[in-house]
Image (cartoon, rainbow over all chains, first blue to last red; front, side):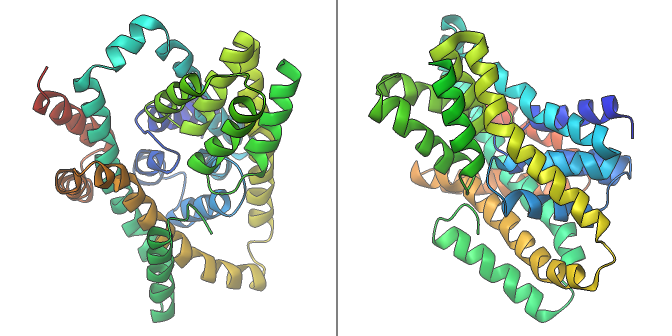
Length: 156
Length: 175
């Protein structure tokens, strides 16, 4: 896939998310479902790579970009991950700060975050279908989910 | 100041496991607690705004902390220093995975890791609801999450679902 198009699609995913992992549903929708340049297995591997190594989780877009478009795709994924970060520089200017402190704007952001939880869970369904074939694999997935939630760990 | 902040971003951004919150906590220690480069109130504001900035929160936190300390150059240095080595490492892992795809031992490792990733994603979804739980708004948040999951599984595009959620959040809140 063309690196510029990949950048635009991944930027759309990051601009509509409020944490590293929540860009996953939009990325999956565009790259796996619509354009078919990525498989669920590759997306699953990209998440695994991001979560077992140090650094921001949002960097899963680097392996996602690589699987979809080689090294130019990896660069596109990296650029899409970085671009929104510079928005905060503008957001903390006085006028923007006042509008962001608006209760309705904060409620809209919270609602998007809660909806993202549902979208991440929905995106996990095809990935789980691809990953869980044997009973021990289902038990392992459930155990990891329970331990991460219960112990408040962010990763393994 | 620029050099010291870049070195700090390089170390904290690339060596901290666990993503956003542990990294932002580690970042707070030196500029706020040890060196008093940034006041506690200012860093709290940066942290809060980083959480509502689209994309990866921790990268936004490095951008704004860098901007506060050294202007535009500080923002660029903080973001690049905190991400480039980790990005190169992930790229290398993806290349290695693709090169060794046919290897039996790698397939065996992946058979074990992939179910764990499915569990991590589920835990990540629950983690997004934790602020609602702390604020006593869990039922509404769960309802929103379930509705979003249902719409997504029915084929609705994620961006449309998120736009709908933002609209509901906006209009249900009094001015």
